[in-house]
Length: 399
Ligand code: NAD
Ligand code: NA
Image (tube, rainbow, N blue to C red):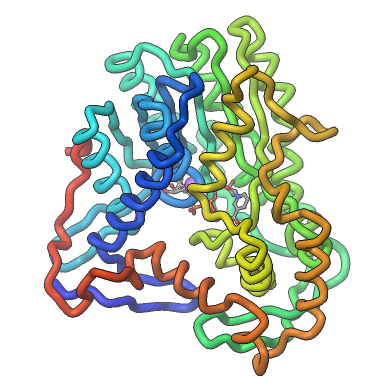
């Protein structure tokens, strides 16, 4: 079928299999070009492996370190005349290239919050790998069904206390407006967001993996967080999602205790702001990212998810001397370039003056929008989007 981009609200509801394969291929080529020589992970479980940071983590482990990877995610398979989700096609492309390179790669499609998917994952590790030495936790979800109580939680993206007014952009139209986001109405909205995006499910995973004996001596596990600048604090760091991220951080000592007898260790890595399906849903953030991209590209320090994950692995998790550099709160920081004083000063100055009239000039809104559509396989050179393409692409390991 011929597949062209179609949007509903801020999301893109179509995906192009050849374009998503190109996205995966470009990431693989980037990682291979780094010629990593240090020892790294060998058998890796990535939870949230199909898009964004999780996909790039999987690609880095596989093509940077020749690791065997198992990926868990929640995606919609392709059907006749109904393209699959981007994460489905990403995984199809990833597995194909991994198999061609002689790398083990299998995937599990289902609800990672459930006991059932955890058990399926454990069974697969036992059958094929025995144990894993790295567990990447990269879920981003608006909902979670609690596996023990059956309660369905929904997260909210809201400030706490007063309402929050700031600039925002519709990146489809480049229209800059003020937006006022109403604050939470009850503590329950914080609790629900913590239940979805906090650390409990990460802990459940590690508990179950450990009890099943599938974690190797010296295992590492890492989950991802974000902090960002003052101007997004009310909606991010100090908002409901920030409370969930605080909870994630508080889970680190608990998981470290669980892993102590294996000499294992857990980390939260604070990553930079990027265009992903999840971040484009947060008000204010896309305008900030557009300005940030402009400034970081001008300084030659721009990174996408793959550059971030390659740096996380090679310069943080698996360094030559084995030391993992941490901040004063025990976190890995790969948002270090985003948070540089000169970068933030310039973004701040631009933030004050940005309007619908000057946005194309002073921000990288075009880069934002291009990258957003690239997440769905559109906007790639060398692909004929008028031509028929086969929408029925399979993930080799999923029957
Ligand atoms: P993403 O939406 O690109 O990826 C989310 C992944 O989770 C996908 O693989 C998806 O299939 C999977 N998933 C969602 N619900 C699931 C479920 N119920 N069961 C199984 N899999 C499920 O998101 P992302 O932006 O890469 O975010 C990953 C992590 O990185 C999050 O913790 C996020 O807060 C953090 N982070 C994001 C940014 C950013 O700017 N995007 C910055 C710093 C940190
Ligand atoms: Na991810």
